Length: 251
Image (cartoon, rainbow, N blue to C red; front, side, top):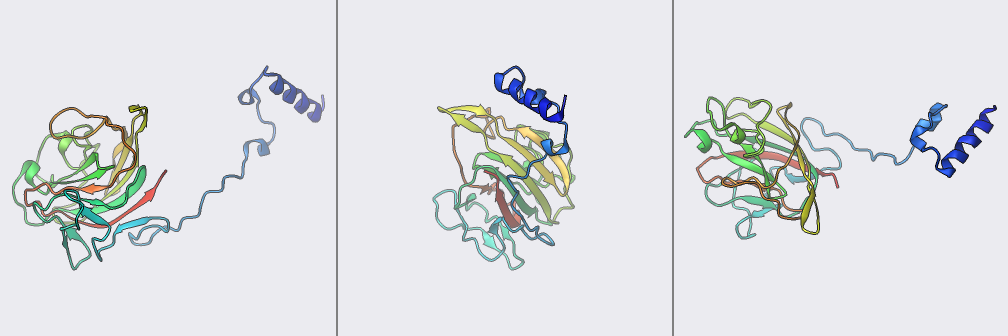
């Protein structure tokens, strides 16, 4: 049987529904190659700079892309000369003016070099995806606490795979991949997921988001669409600082 005759036979069986495309073994390399869609070209950033398709949320020059979570007024955190911002104690959380769904987030943070307090009251802040799901920020160096609330935890849900913090007062990096949950008719039909890389170390490996991350109570799953990114003022003079914040939208 010639190759052409064989292909015509296979085609007729496919059309008749006797076999599926997955059951036909390719006989040429071209049958398993495709050329569209072509991925967009992205230029990586150098020396910590954001890639070419990133949305820069904080570059050290202003807080214009952030507002107070309390009342939507201008963000009241402290803008520092070194290009960072610091929690302004008891002024409240801040959040982005722009709403996001699934994202790749890069953010750098540090706790103050001067150690004050212990446990959850030392260098405590948090990064909230979709305004609901917290990745914990905490100074855990020689400072034990409950492990599902330590640095790098998905707060009260997932213990990090490792504690990868740099020395107190130095800059940490979080690279976070967040896939938002999906809802239909007010019910969650697909859980969201989080992957967290802390200073180059994988500490959360595509873990399932069980719901919101409250201090007291079980996770809840209110239906939602896109939402802001939020940074926490823990209200205990934590003096956590942030810099170099950018996202890439994934949806």
